[in-house]
Image 1 (tube, helix red, strand yellow):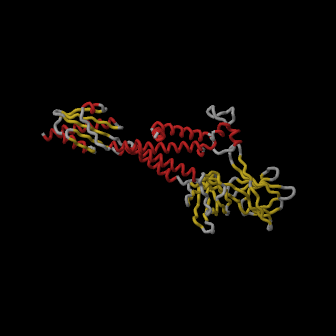
Image 2 (tube, helix red, strand yellow):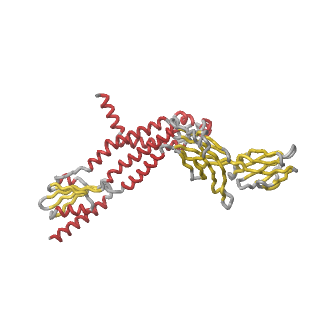
Image 3 (cartoon, one colour):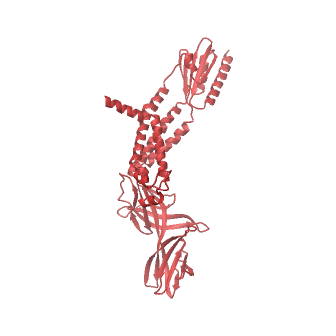
Length: 438
């Protein structure tokens, strides 16, 4: 019995509103720390960027970051524990407070004493001429009215009382989706040359219970880039086929940034690209492949791709590309521009014929499995609906009659001024109605 009392006491604390708020603030602060500190980097990265003499918030250096696991906040055991306790707190609060509160709101609550009526923020008296007219006007304003002897109780906007329950349900669904994605999702990054195929193999992040599909093969049929008039990149596209283990095409799609491919719970994103090499025909006998080196200009951030090609024992040329438009510049071994060339055109350098047959490209695809994303979207949808519903006021009106007047009291959870105007209109309509009948 003693242990049972302790368990109920702990559950009562966890299910309290104050505990839920405290947990939410701790989770928000942890997420803030996880945002300002780069996640999932190497130890050397943290030593360089978070040294002891340059602490974050004056407290955290690389040593504290590694000790408390702040380099992987969102997958750390204590962060997952916080989410689980917050999840439990929301469930307990929903069943122990919100649902009983909703049930209580639907009960008829007649007040018979003037002292009970006067304790509310709104109180007034009108002449007792016809209680049925007052009840009629409340019904006309969409109130649910209950009448017992000389007392009246009315309410409207009960759906506004459901809003906190909707908020709790949305948070519970969002947390469930986040935990499912964290434990069962994964993310892979593949660099696939044009015309090649690839399995899912370069996993950069995975959950504890994630399963990699072994029946998905990705083939890149083509890769190309569209440019603006000023030759800056507008968009890049990957023509992709998804194959099964037998080589049959399951799906064919052209990917671009913000237009992913979705299949069997996987999402294929276009994230990167690179030029990997040149296919060059020398004379009529040899075809070679030379790799391209990526060079970034530190002054303006522009990117160049360079290929160094020996022509003979004493000469070397450098082929420079700025994009996939097929335009290339050729420099000699002294760095002097010789000429500009294009693909599939015969060129002669130091009496050696060359033809650039193909610019060999690779596309960067990110493949993600996010099994809980549907629950997360559903949670946010319910949250948006509950936000709109929250603007509906829950209003209550009590009335008690004596021989000469009707005592009226009322309260609302929001829009107090609108409630007062509504009651004033009811009084005005009441006197008009009874004067007409007289």
